[in-house]
Image 1 (tube, one colour):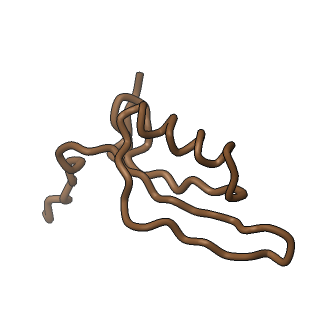
Image 2: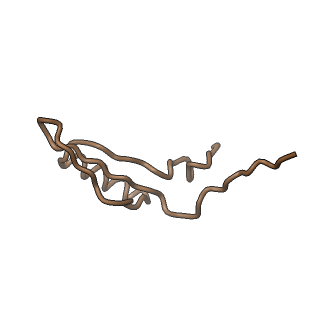
Length: 73
């Protein structure tokens, strides 16, 4: 499997989970935590006129991805 610098074992290092503030959203966050992600920052909430919409960032812990610096000729 090919992995890009933004991935770990084929999983993105950063994800922003969004959804209605309900059980399904909590299950989505819980599943990400069970998959090895950790919370990154506080959740964000907004109201779209009908319901509360929530966003929570999660990241995979570990060493930073290698950075490739071009060599000048």
